[in-house]
Length: 67
Picture: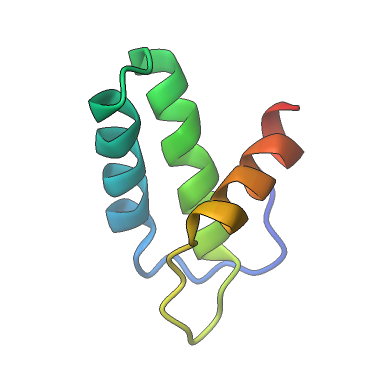
């Protein structure tokens, strides 16, 4: 997915944490992957910051991508 900025630091951590969280609450692997993708996309757009989204930011980004 296209992103405004591209600082990939932490994207893998954000993806993994979001996927595991989604699986833990009963989402399907496909949905968990989408959730992880939204977390990584958000993280890539945060230059020079921690970059990990909180749940509000993550759900907003997920809705922007998947509707």
